[in-house]
Structure formats: C-alpha cells, structure tokens
Image (tube, rainbow, N blue to C red):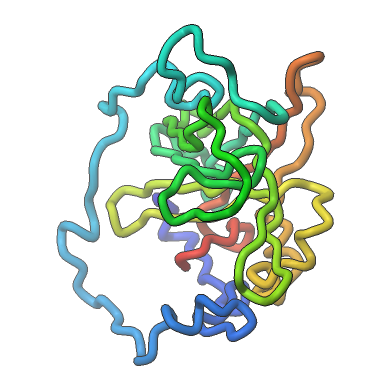
Length: 242
C-alpha cells in the first residue's frame, strides 16, 4: 500500500494479537516457533507487482447473486440479499484507487463451497461465495451478495463463528496482500468468538464491523453495510496477516 513516508506513523504492535494465542487453537500449530527475520534489503519481487488497472473483470465478478449461475433459468441464491461497500484509504484518508479487492464467504446456511467444509448445512446450487472488484478513482468498492450464516467450528465443544465475509486487499506487490474479515453490526456472536478474543483493544474489533447504512440500502430489495478499509497508520483496519 502507498503511504506518505514523510509522515510515517509507526504501527502499534499492541494493536494486533500475538501469533501464538492458545485460546484460538489453530494458532498454536501455525504460529512461528523461532524469531522472525527482518528483510533489510527487499528484492524487486517484494517491491513491485501487477498493475490491476489492466485486469479484465467479468460483468458479474462483484455480484454474487449472478456470478455462479450456470444458465438464465437457474434460480437466485437463497438468503438475505445485501450490499457490501466502502472505501480503501490510507492513514491520512487518501483513496487507494485501482486496487484489487477480493472476498469470499459462507452461504446463508453457514457453509462454504469448499471440499473440506463438512458442516451439515446444504450447499446452495446458485451460490459460489467468491467475488472480486477494483476500487475506483476515489477508492470505492461494492459487492452484492447474500448475508452469510454463522457456523460451528471445533475450537471447543460449542464454538460458533459470527456471520462474516473475508476480504483481501492487494497492495503494490504480492507480499503486501492484506486479509481481514467483516463482521455485522449487532451480531451477538462477535463477543463470544475465540478469534475476536485475541484482540485486546476493543477499538481494533470495531474496525472489523460493517455498519448498517440505510441510505445505501434498496427499499424492498436489500440492506447495505459499509466497511471501510484503512491500510496504514493509527486508524488502520485490523488485518489477519499483520
């Protein structure tokens, strides 16, 4: 991500959770066991990357209601229709244009279209669960989709993930890809989630919550949730891989 180096704001390391968080059991096996190595002299592959302005997008890449349909006679996905939108900006509010935003999610029943997902909820034959788009000149992005359902996971005998959408934002190189999740305002499962518990600062949790926006909602059609992504500085959104 681009930022003004003359006004650099150092990252607050206490903002992010430790890599090793026993309450979040999958972090135990995947957390680093040795000291991290600092890259003092990054190579071209760490400093450069694709120009997404030349990326050819499909007509429904950001519309998950339509991008998995095999033919015109196939029905629409089941569930609550929503719009997810927001801006990608830097720490000073400057928009990040022409960057690739990708998202993936479970269906309305809480099941992913993935071979390793064995949750008993059925797959939706009209819903693939993935989308992508490019931000415009002012950093705006938009998706139309279905609100995902919560689902159980084997962290402890009765752990449930809140409804959430995974979001990926690409920076100027492959190594600067950032991944986070958008939760939904008012979800009672958020404060019960072991992953959320790894964040000690309540303000960090707030950066991952999409806010209901009635002005952008469509009457008799769908609600809208705004989820802005701040990629650097004091107001940054919490990202999983930082």
